[in-house]
Image (cartoon, rainbow, N blue to C red; front, top):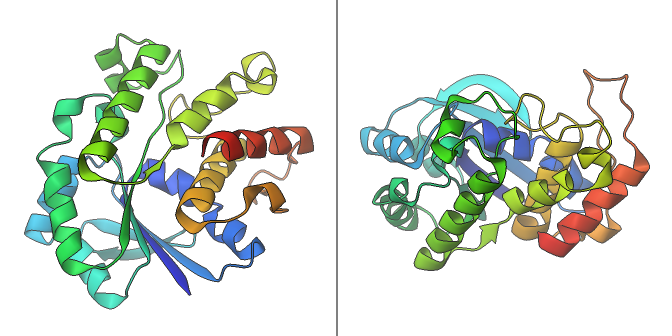
Length: 248
């Protein structure tokens, strides 16, 4: 059993929605846990760890539960192969928000787990996003992307962490004809991912990098139970896979 733990927020929730199914279809028995606090930053994660706060909603294999837990509680329950952490989206391009909190979290995890630690690169908002933190980047989509790409790369290099390049994948998908000129949006509200293609792209990126799944050979087609009216376009699915293979 391959186990992955995300200490995250709604962006890790988006990224892990299809992750379990993609890995299963690739022949990997797996369990994926997301510890969710909406908008949670590295600073807040560290404060929660320090206080052993049971603030995190426990999400298993892409499904929300009514259970609330602390990081320590979850690390004591099971051994994980991989633990993924990330910055809050609004802080993602501001390098001075990462430390000392990222370093403190990594030190804590090293003392409590033998898991490989990954850093997940979140994505930039849409050009017309109404998110209040977009103003930190002059409401410029490209500026936000370049800032977060630089901040994540520097953090990963500083701590020797493998980087899951979700933000770069989402940015590349935005530039395809299916989304740039096709009347579609890779997000559903200007910052959270499109329920079908956006979540699929992020999950593929995680599955390739953190679980070693052969994305090119993957036959899993995403389905959203509460969106039966939108069958996935096989051309778009194929294009997303190509992008993930080239970047992720």
